Amino acid sequence: MSDIRYFTPVEANRTLPLVKRIVADIQASGRRLRRLAGELGPAAADDAEIRKLIASLNEFFEELEGIGCSYKDPNFNLGLVDFPAVIDGEEVLLCWRSDEPAVTHYHGPMEGYQGRKRIPDELLREPGTDQGEEQYDDSSGTGEPVSGDPGRSAR
Image (tube, rainbow, N blue to C red; front, top):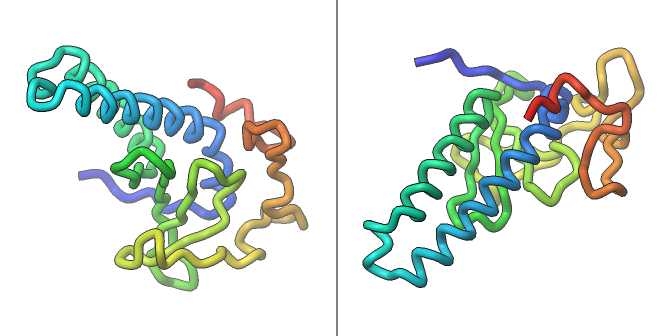
């Protein structure tokens, strides 16, 4: 078993360009899986395309786990991703939803999405700057940091 990687909010936000692409793949594959399984009914268990979609989803989940975060949306609707973190000495999960431009909320491990709270502004700022979440520009629809992060665009 590997050690848990704890993210700061700034570090979690730096991973978002890659995480967003993986989550988009998960949502597309998951929706296709649900639709196809609904069409096939009981025959879905033996369908080659269903097995292929499940294998693809597992690979995408492993990609996220390799980054250090995890996908938390079994219905493939919200695209929820949790990043382990520590805030005020407590283990928490930074919580990002696929329609959000940045990671700005967290919740306790037992609270889930409904227990989301805003991350304190001072934790959203880059160290040594006054820049916080406002550096994330979602006007392009990509949610990419304005300054870019070419080291995270390997996917």
